[in-house]
Image 1 (cartoon, rainbow, N blue to C red):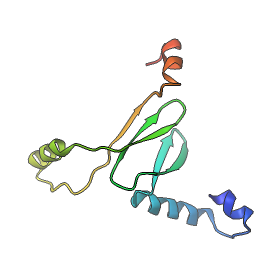
Image 2 (cartoon, one colour):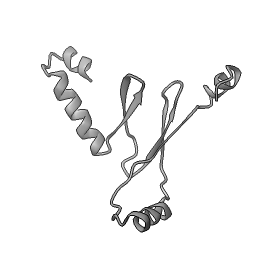
Image 3 (cartoon, rainbow, N blue to C red):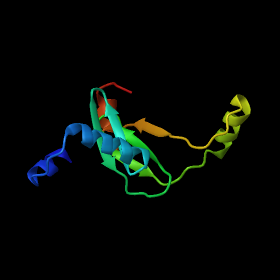
Image 4 (cartoon, rainbow, N blue to C red):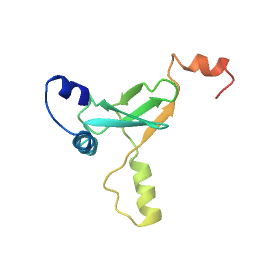
Amino acid sequence: MYQNLLKKKKKIGLTSIYRSLDLFESLGLVFKIINGPGVKYKLCELEDHHHHIVCKACGNVVELNFCDISDWSKKVTESTGYQVVDHQLNFYGFCKSCKPLQTSSGSR
């Protein structure tokens, strides 16, 4: 994003870029991927509430267009007394391309 703006001769600081990305994340427009010291953002294609699965090897992200954790929300409310108003749930694993590499290297 920053490099594209620079190419278009738009002057903007990195701080403004990161503030904007944080806002986009809070609005559900982008998904923030933290992989060790690196951080990437992926534009979400789904507009409604959804979750993600991230490959721990290559960083590929797939959007999941379903969410059925209403039983979990009830259990959280019953055990804590909190009124659940929102949640975030992400899955991590190895994609079809990276899974064989993990198996052959002995990692799991």
